[in-house]
Amino acid sequence: MNGLVKGKEVHFDDEYLHVKLEDDRIISTPIDWYEPLKKATLSELKEYKLICLNTGIEWESIDYHLNIESMLEASLTKVA
Image (cartoon, rainbow, N blue to C red):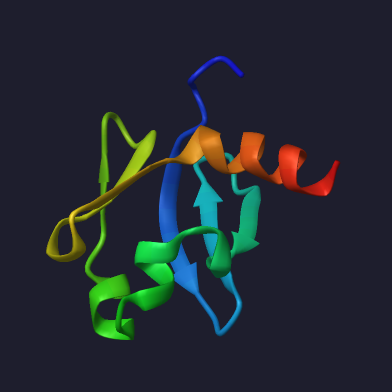
């Protein structure tokens, strides 16, 4: 990965964290992979902000940060 994976929107459903990228692709990973997000309320999940030139996501209220590129790496590792 080259570190240029940039997000523009974050969405959730009962099972997945979805990140829409600047090029309109969508990355979806199971929410169960992220224990702090799994335990968070829906209102806490909605209070995210994109950080580091849109390459990361921060949930300040639960003190959690996620690198968007790592979602791709995690999905490759989990599937293999």
